[in-house]
Image (cartoon, rainbow over all chains, first blue to last red; front, side):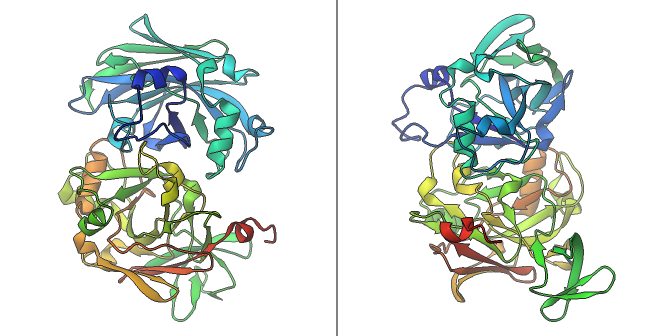
Amino acid sequence: MYYGVILNDRQSLERIGPLDGAPYKGAPKAPALYIKPANTVCAQGAAVRLPKGSPSVEVAGAIGLVMGRAAGRLTLANALEAVSEVVLVADLSLPHDSYYRPPIREKCFDGSLPVGPRAKIADIEALVVTTQVDGVEVERFALADLLRDPARLLVDVTEFMTLGAGDVLLTGVHYHAPQAGRGSRVEIHAEGVGALSFSIAEGDA
Amino acid sequence: MKRGRIAYNGAILDVTETPGEAVRLADGRVVAEGAFTWLPPVEVGTVFALGLNYADHARELAFKAPETPLVFLKGPNTIVGHKARTRRPDGVAYMHYECELAVVIGKKGFQIAKENAFDHVAGYTVANDYAIRDYLENYYRPNLRVKNRDGCTPLGPWLIDRDDVSNPLALKLTTRINGVTTQSGTTADMIFDIPTLIAYLSSFMTLNPGDVILTGTPEGLADTKPGDVIETEIENICRLVNTIVDDATYFASTN
């Protein structure tokens, strides 16, 4: 199972703007999580088909923490020991402005999580994820920009939900990540982890 | 047929119903209640849950009924079997049950037409989709801290074959706290019925055997306290029992 978190980096908080008013009525307190179920996972080289009526998709390059063991109620001292490696993914979302309701159609359509290479990384927070659409760099996500660093995020998530061995917790995705249209090629890269390539198919899912 | 799963004598076993407080193993042995541990009747794949899918419940929570299904997802950590214990964290003000008809998918499908939806159903069971309202936040609401807590979604005990339920959209739902009825409704009052939900979800995602759709709850929520025994029952499906425990009991390292 893949879990992700929104609004976990400074840039996203700046992009979304003030959160005091409706519907949010304040910044998130607990990690604002979502689930990418099994049908979303696709491999390196996939041609992802978008739901009918969606000309483009947001592409958020992200680093996931792969759990090496089942882990509940982790502490800051032991959290990273439960992580066996990291994985490079592209979290695809149909553009949605509001984070109020769970994004099922937007984030859970078939193939909306291309999954790339894994690596053992000593300093996860030093990673920088770059996204290229048709050969042009459109986004950089530096994990140094995270609000909850990987250990803190694991502590706050496993406080109420146990992660299983092999589960993946994405560390963060940009609000309004850049979009890729049908027919485009996408490459996500993180130095030390590797590259993930896929395309957006012309046809409907 | 009613099918269950238990842990007994060092194994995970499929069982069927037998008269009295007991279950029957595949080899014919009968095991008495109390001598085994109930497991959820299916190893769940993707678990979907519906918010505000009964008009009276939407009103109860002061929401307008949604125009498209309000769906959220659950991880496997939250599913527990019949007669399990569920933790109410100390200091929480409002933790309520939700009695729900659970639809178990039996056949893979994508872009399933409403008229074919029941072909993809293996059967039905009962879920109690607890929520702790203290933790509600307005991001991807209902957020995971409210709805995806360890052991907060009891499921079971039986999976009833689809063809044994003549009309899943006319079943009485009842919840009792310590034997006193606090919630009663009917699946006839669902806003988005089972074929509509299957058609909607499969319009953009492939449904697989073992996926489970929790179809929402009618009005009649009530707070639950440590020690309370919560029975969620759906007519002709089954009766699911769960006990609320406090932190000291839940975290005690005795068993």
